[in-house]
Length: 459
Ligand SMILES: [Zn+2]
Image 1 (cartoon, rainbow, N blue to C red):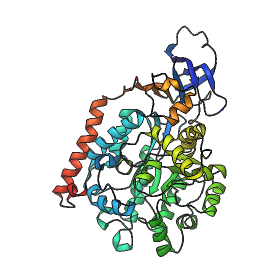
Image 2 (image 1 turned 45 degrees about the horizontal axis):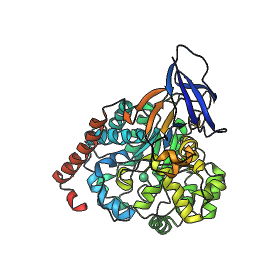
Image 3 (image 1 turned 45 degrees about the vertical axis):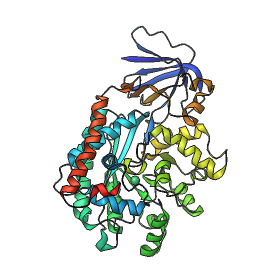
């Protein structure tokens, strides 16, 4: 089965842009693309891309989908204050909460041009069902590629960590469950819809032993490593006080720098830190809206790119970024860099590149995803940039990045339609949204019932 997208402006990220051209898709791959009219192919399905911009599908490299159920809480807190307030609420989540939150969160991502998303799930309260399976099931329904990371925390308050002991797990249990998750779900194939990563949560919630054992496990199984690093200055102080090292130096000591590792945030980096990330091929997920919402700071993205450190984008959990659409993060990243470094700090095309190819590199999939090239998977977004207001902008990439998110004519994942004319086609859109709202109500009810916290007081 072949599909032709015609008369479309193509920003392939790799190679020159095509002002009016075609993309031919065979099966789940891009067969060819080029300028001018599409080749004659009587059996092909056709999409008229007139007035549209085609880009690679956006790749989201940091999220906590369960947090859809705890949006709007602790609105004016620092990261540590916000975490301490919310850990007790999250301790009440169950598989139903996670499935509803993930369905809404992944649907929302698809509606913002995302075709591949990671997720970092690091709370597994006992007796609450199979939370990891619950989010994987949601991703199957929504139909975007999914890279869930089996997260963990083992360093509760009694061990000098930030989270209360009730939300941490024992080291042996974590390693066994993580190993099982990789064995059960990880698909390394080219067309994979599901890959697993290993992701102890952060330096302030995990023991050094968990970090090193997790790295050994991931490397033995050939999967990637992810954690939070250098998000706030509070983390800097915690690491210096507890380990005598700043976060990146601590990660280096634990064997956590390398081309199979990507960090969330990487905000508070020294010149030396940036050099280490670049030299080792360690990636970063830049989450500008979350960093802004929590007042964490502005990452040195333009310096990282200039020095060869890979950067992808992430929306971060829905409770710290609220309803951030992934496409909105291109604009947020561009504005943050320019506010800090001036108008040449990040171009619209660089913002598009980190959102696509940069993200694919973070997930180890730059040979399969992240650009529109023959042989790569047919994951793409068709943005309608001919609206009555947006059509005053002659450059469609400028319209995409500088302006408000344009409507989506299509989102394709492996050639399959996930979004058409701004509506989800794989799941009922209203039901997906309602599942997220119900997950919120259920989580608040469960938290109150358990007496863990007066959840309503967090508003
Ligand atoms: Zn995070």
